[in-house]
Length: 180
Image (cartoon, rainbow, N blue to C red; front, side, top):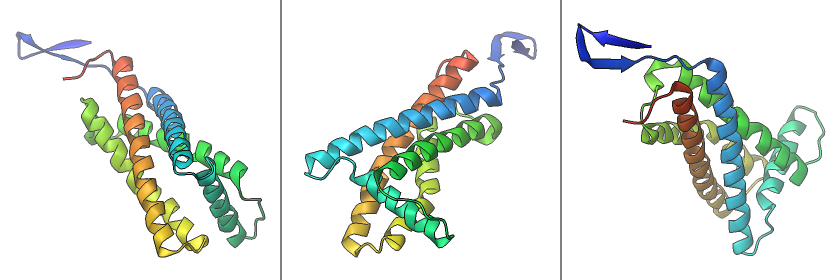
């Protein structure tokens, strides 16, 4: 729908409402895409430095095992639970990011750069409690903890870039607008 401001036919604004469902849908897609890209880069980097490609999944799975054991729930750790955790949490972060962008007017983005910025900040902040659990529960050394947080920052930064790009482009297409 187009509206004209104060009788000036040259000043127009395109008004379209993106639905919550579209925000959530693009968030899920962006979260899955970000998780896939992050994991492929991570597995390649781990292989390049001579470590098993699935090392990170093993760490995440073992962290989940220790976390659940605190509540008296016995699960097997390792790679399978690590993969499950990655592919549940990644799209879930995207789900909420898409919903937030659609529902919070202050976070409505009109440029790709803003969307990526918001996504990276969102992911880096939201992931900290999860990341902090690993060194504590697995009793990592100071060196391993620094490596864990450093590598995690880079990987989650990459995830945020992909999430922001996918959600921004998806909502822009749904809205029928272009970037400024």
